[in-house]
Structures are given as structure tokens and as C-alpha cells.
Image 1: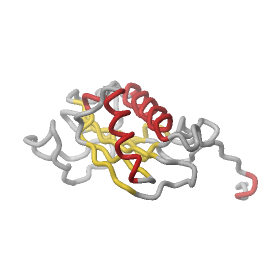
Image 2: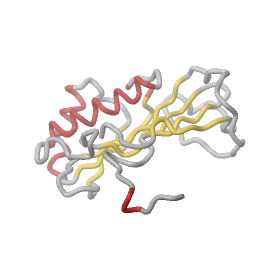
Image 3: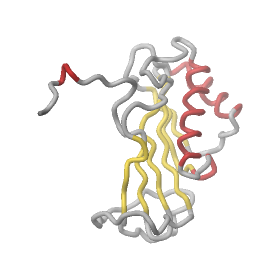
Image 4: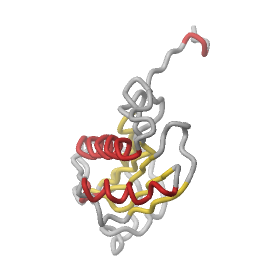
Length: 171
């Protein structure tokens, strides 16, 4: 018996927050666009770009820590601002949170909700090899974008992939 769409209730955000890709010699984590959204799916700090940036940085930082990574492992990121005049505030919040100097691009773009002013996505690489207990996945070929850590490393095939988090997330 399957459920009708009207019978399913989803709180928060129903998508993968991040994907972890295990290479033979390192692990890569791709963090999806993250904003100031509560675990129940409500916008936090509506109208306050500084508070939204702080909340988002905290959530992304916690996600990185859950994969044994830090902001030092971030290779690049996109910071989206709804209002171009908020770009300076974003830069100041990055400095205050001590993540300035990382290769981020600030983009003036629409955000998924009217009351969200900021969204962040990042990529990170761990120089550590994945645990040997990781189940193998189908091999795939692809090129990794150039980054601070992997610019001189040959492109290895993907050996496993898994969703770091699925379902309601912290925002």
C-alpha cells in the first residue's frame, strides 16, 4: 500500500543537505545551498541579513564537523545575497566568524524564499582517506574542479558516495 501525497507530512527541508564522495586518497563533501531555516522548516531571523549569515555559517560549520572537516578544508563556495547592498555585511560576518580569505564568490541572486536574504554552498576536501568500512559504489569517471588542495592531484574515480543527511535539516 502506498501513501497519497496528501498523507505525507514533511517538516523542515526534504533534500540532501550534503553529499560525501570517497576517493582512494581523500574524501570530498559537497554542501547544498543552506540558509537560515529552523529544523521545523521556518525561516529564522527574517529581515536580518547578519543574523541569517551567522546562523547559516553555524549550520554549515556543524555539518563540516560532523564529517570530521573544518572551514580549513573548504576549497570554494558560493554565497548568495538577495540584495547586492548586503554583500559588505556578508564579508564582515565571514571576517567575524574567522572564515575570511577562503575562496568564496558572492553572487547577487534570488533566494528560494521571499524572507531569506542569504544562502551558502561550499565544497570541502579531506586529505584523509575514507574508512575502509565504506561500502563500494559503482565507479564513475569525472573531473574535479581545481581547488587549493587538489590542484596538482590527478583525478581519481569515485569509489563510493552517500548522502550525508537526507530529510529535515537544521536549515
